[in-house]
Image: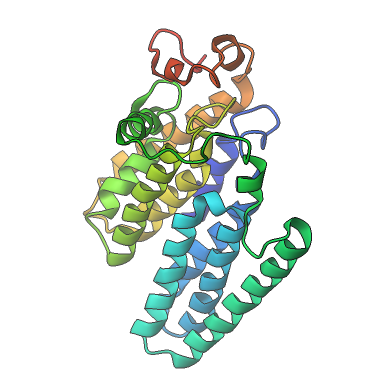
Length: 278
């Protein structure tokens, strides 16, 4: 699952700089991927205490590095702690608690020194001049959510169908996969509520980079073989990587984003005859 996830990560950069379209996701990818690996390894009875404890701390670290993806971070931390409790590893729970406290303390001290608050509020401060960071109108939320799934220039079904496969297959599989499937849906709803749900000037749904990696892990690491046909999962992964590579080597913001002025006209993402795809 991890090699496929990393291939998707590298292809989903979108812009020629391989990172312009990721920013904080690039940094948060490492603890996110490590926490999912730890969760998978935690099924091994002989090493579960170490891996699940580390996974809980790594999930928290990823969420603090990238608060916008906090839903997935919380889901990973909860799953690791749940597995420890289910296995009745008291020492593992204590270890996980100590690691989580260590991570929280380090970040709280840094935030207090750098931005004057204990909370990871850097992004909120950056966007403080906007008229509301999140939108609560149900009509706007519905339009943004559907655009993130279906629109020709920002839709996951086109740019990263592996996410759609993970949500559907995960809901029919193991308890861990069901939790991550639900967290993917909630995470997408958070993006839809963000006042710039389209992610600014970028190739495809930039905000959903980490859910793409998470979906690869869900599909190839957690779901049962009967939950999704393997050929369908493979096809979705191939399309995700191929479309990402098209963006990586062929994306030029002057050809579409800047021309249509996506930041002022986000409805342009729905255009079928004029989209960001070359």
